[in-house]
Length: 453
Image (cartoon, helix red, strand yellow):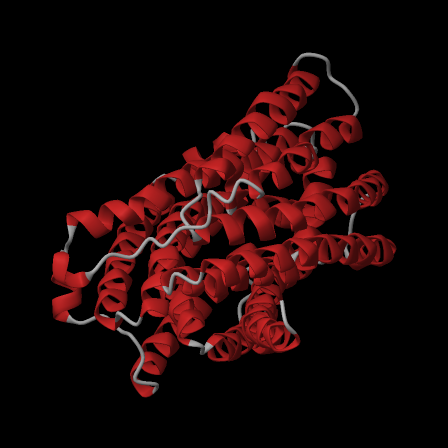
């Protein structure tokens, strides 16, 4: 790679990775601010909301697969210069995202107690979580479509605009939370439900802003022709990427959701500590997620132009970056872990759990950062989405989860021993990653000629 090519690489990377990383950080900060404010209220409130939010987490796995599968194709068609196909694919993922959102909205609105019982048998947590779910379910109708608009902004080169929207929604969420959770200035104190109302408000604001912004910037936005468009061949191309990504997302996400189930059966101290450790992991890993998204878009555009040598060089560079980012994330978590425990009202036992969980999480985020950039960024850009599903299946479902479940319900091991095995899957994946990369299954142009469709 020449000096000019390196400059171009870093220019493209920073233009995408910084705004996307900031957006991920802001999204994580919304969750962190909710956890912090609720954590200052009661331990049960933060535990119940954390468990209830597993429903939105699972919903976002489905939406994320549809958006990512469509996004890989959109990036390649954008690189090719086929704007009509870009719009058609955008409309397609908007339709799928909305359908998924409606299904989860109905489940959370009408069956909240049943959903909470999946994760805990504690009556107080079920009561708080069910009430929260009924309210927050309305935010599901907005969030899925908003993700589609965020994707399109990034591909169009307007990633900074999506970051501005995230900044405003974060400020709005924290402000509304402050008034509604604690009942400030005569506003009724709604506790956990105050956080739910805040989420509904900010998701609605974000979607409206995205729609308006797409027209102001003369960007891609849905129209009647695009919403009616259907091509079996192109949709098949999209699902060829989306289905393995969905399988991977579900295998990983349901496994991650099982973490809440396991912790939920180990008591409120373990649940609260694991919930806060998860928020810390989310905050720390925002950079690697931004780089992963940036890698997918940058490499996808090159592959759409059939610039395979340049794409291979960029892929190599992203691999090197992934190790540096993993090391930085690991160091940050080690430095910040003593500080985190002082921000929450926890029992002494929960604080002990949290400290130990954060120490092990440093190793987790190192492996997670590398896996995320390579497996979720480079590989899907060229259609290699199967490896992620296979690695999650073996590392999570054949190793870490079976051991953690046995330790919890059969052997009754200590909480920290269970937590370590439960979170070891990302570390187990590492030895197999680079050999897969070197096979270059991801080096493909996935576009088709529009006139042949």
